[in-house]
Image (cartoon, rainbow, N blue to C red):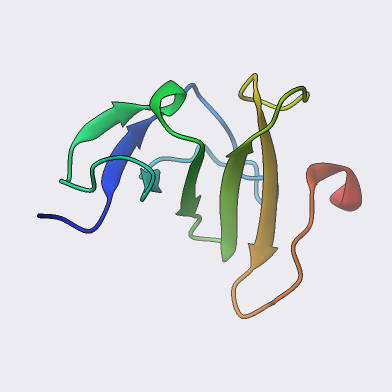
Length: 88
């Protein structure tokens, strides 16, 4: 048994450096190191080389780069979560 699953997402960019993100993971699935679509889980996350941690959480209604999910992120070492509107 693995500890997480890999998540396939539409193209999304880091809110910090604007580079494409990849390597999304989730613990919402069977956690067997399976590859799942983002539509199969309620939460998924990754990190960026610029130091941001990016997390998507399923919401009832929202606007984000991935429909049906809200994005939040934080700089490595920070306990404070932000959303994209906070950095614009």
